[in-house]
Amino acid sequence: MSQKGRPRSFDRDAALRQAMRVFWKKGYDGASLSDLTVAMGINSPSLYAAFGSKEALFREAVDLYGATEGFEIWGAFERPGSARDAIADFLRASARAFSEPGDPKGCLIVLGALNVSETNVEVFRDLSERRMSSARDLAGRLKQAVAAGELPETVDCDAIAAFFLAVQQGMSVQARDGASREALLAVADGAMAAWGALTAGSERSVEA
Image 1 (cartoon, rainbow, N blue to C red):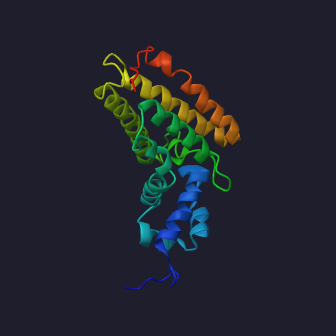
Image 2: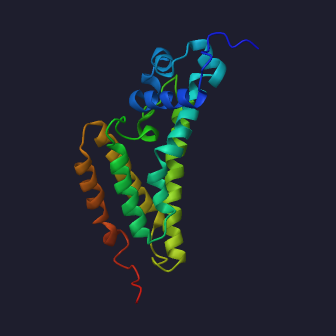
Image 3: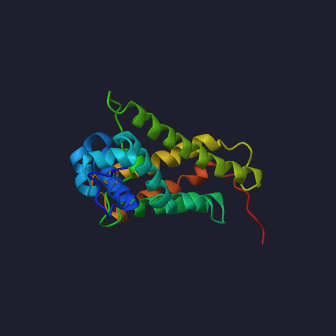
């Protein structure tokens, strides 16, 4: 089958990474087809041949973002340690990722399509579901802490998860507005000062 319009050296993975950066910087609606093809080094027919549509390309770009840029952030919940340490690491990793020199600022999943429109309904729903999935994952880590006896059964894991995810998403917006890494880290540390109140000061200490 003819691959007319696609460079012979076409690297799909590299093109996808470039598309991810365009979407990350401009959002779904703000990224024009011209923006994407220039960054990817291909023409429109090649883009559609390789990825199907702009929406399908965006979904793949978001998947790539989660597997690469988001790995360090969400990996905090996979590492050994207390729930408190995991959330602190999650927030501080977010502060670093959202302010990485040379990268677009903020989070693609948070900022990719904040407002629903006729052209992005499915994209908006997809990102919204991904954000809700993040809340469930965060709550799940807290529930593990409850099951392990680290936190009491009376703790509202969903409410705590919603609070810290709101902080993280707010940090994404602040990063896009130009907040420095130091400012974002201060937000992360400030949010952790609320841990005692959120858990009603009822963490169980572990005797050595």
